[in-house]
Image 1 (cartoon, rainbow, N blue to C red):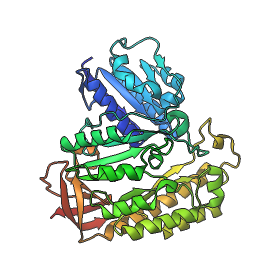
Image 2: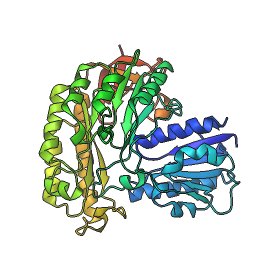
Image 3: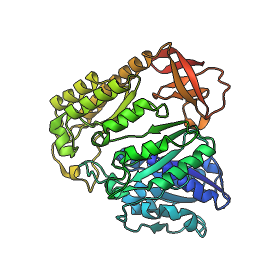
Length: 434
């Protein structure tokens, strides 16, 4: 095998895992190709958050095998952890690799048989470690901003969420290897680094004497020549005032927070097992906006949780309308076997879920347009992106999460620049270099 191709589904943690897989396979003297049809080995790193993501994974696997029947096909990630037998039964699959053994992929594929025959399933139980490792993230697949995963797993056990079952309990990396990895990325010339984790805000909290997220961030910003860092999603209960103040005071931080809400109704948050009230999140949004006036605030909303009434949904809409949000990520409730919510009665009819999602999508578009228009004529810090970012050519991403097109951009990717927002339309933002 000389060429491999990686197909990644899901969250930023999955993208970070794929970067680690890319690093391991490259050490076998294999070359990555962006075209799975040209690969000798195809690795699919899966997501299983919803039924829709499961279906998309299965369709993709069948298409990959149809387009390249001679390639060895390995399936890993969260769907592989949750239901390895279903994936192993798909024609063309050679190996299904659970999350516990994912880092052994380079070792396991050395002797992987040619396509055909029964798939190998490597699926040991997830272990209850308190720590996780920090693999190299430098091989980004051409993308501009490497992801450094400092935490994995989750102990929250929200009633609808399959993630603790497929990622295991919360685990944190020691600060020293994290700082070493970031120094290495800075030395390689990366200008923006994204700090991520399955439950990022819980970093270090299970180990006595371990650094917490704030402590880690104060050490990261002291690294010489570091350009900018961006934080991935942080749960409301873990986003401490000290982190908000640090982001406001340090020019190293991107002014961007993603804080999951899920519902604006306390009556629904309780059976969701979300450990906060709607008022707590409303106040948190207000505090962030006051501390960092140009901040981009994003959130997640789960629509159609069992028992969600029209009044519950209206409470969610009111909270969103009243909050300084720049965008929403909207998801329908998807019953996952093994979770508490799987057996809950009072399912919301699909047509009502669809209508509610449509309303929230329109609200998200309206709030995002209003947010971007606030910056018309203003100068913002940004980073130039590569074509692999899937945001189009001549595109930059501002510190406060505005994707802007700069016509005729000649600055190479991975460069920190200042841009001025010139024109904002519903589906686009145009800017010029300063």
